[in-house]
Length: 251
Image (cartoon, rainbow, N blue to C red; front, side, top):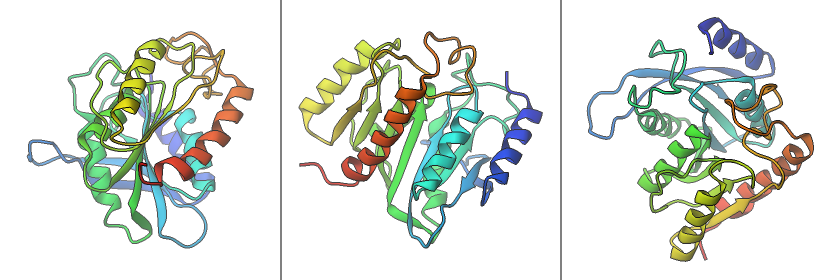
């Protein structure tokens, strides 16, 4: 389980890689009640904005080297990155097995609202990216379609809930993870509906966590593990598809 001292160390490591800092913001509950103050690591790319932005939603175990490494890659590719920490301010070590403890969608809404106030962020290109449980949150947000959200990128979601997608969505869905069949049917349905662009990157022979170099014992206990070749191929394809698919209007 992730301890607060580990969180502090991870934050220090990311800060050492370049211009990154903790950025507080108010969560935004759907019922209009007052949200709590939460935080996340914010990193800007080099150059002059406005930049597209990515709100990163970790899995239920919170910020790990896995998401931190993706944050660095995205910033190097020209994205402002807000890596959410929904656990620290709530004094929780993990959200795994505690689905009713809080609604992470509140934090995503709050992050969008905060990013929309920043002059260096392009208000028409804010994307929500998540992993597993975080991917399910990103899908839920793509169904909710709040103002300011341009699209979603989801790594191996469970697809247990299947909202009608109202924002372009890019699925990173390897063939050997538990939700593959359910998500395949879901993607086909949404593609057939034709409301928004739906795209899939489907690395073969790997499962959840194929992109997690730090997950030595598997990804949250799941089968499979890190696969360097698949991770490198997906990274290049992902950045290309984010530039081409999600930024373009649906046909």
